[in-house]
Length: 100
Length: 234
Image (cartoon, rainbow over all chains, first blue to last red; front, side, top):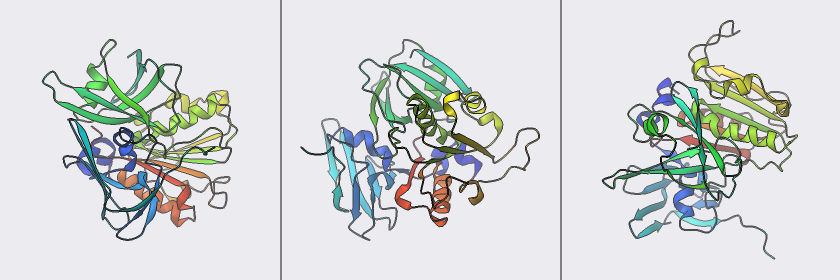
């Protein structure tokens, strides 16, 4: 870590993490998806959406596997809709309140 | 905005009055959207710094030089200016006050904000959970919430706080400036054997170094939760 990281993160760090997707995904889903446990199609790594590496220099957000770098999820918000591409996700295990 | 407090020369806590605020968990954040008169709009995420007080919520914003949003929020934004926020959001990097087990908090710089929300939530809930905070910061002048951490309210019995100064130390500090290291992490009561819930927040490099140290020391990776501040932190 350099001192520059502390004051100018936008200059030195390239990515955020999946926690930053909580707001945009909550616009689409009824529950929080960042706590969901997913599996990477490419390498099989299992972990929470919150741990993905998120790049937002593109028109939308691109979330990559922290293990192998494969694209797990892409999300673009347009003026009247959203595009969600989950091509790199085998499945998502989503925590929910207990069912009756 | 109802009120504000300057934490450091470059960081300000905004106290916002949000009608119909639903409450939130410690560690959650909000997305703040600013829209210019010409329609240009941009958004940033900020951690909530404290439990809600009815409709009052607190964000602490670090001013990023040349940033698009933080110079406005920490300098220009004032009482009466509207602000568009979405939240609370985030369900992973959260601590629930019903959880009684030990908690290890590791903050790098402005990464203290959601961790301070956990300490304040613990206090408000009168939780007996043992907490340990290791707060890595460049200089003493960069400490957020310094008075509250140095002179903790009585409800913070059971919260152990230690500091790592990376560039300059306080007068009489027993060690020269240094980076966080393994010995800072596994204090008595918070060792890997105890398997505390670990929350690591800060710049990407800090988060990766600390998370790797924790896993190397034998902490359960599933109990090491991380949140990093990224390129749109401005």
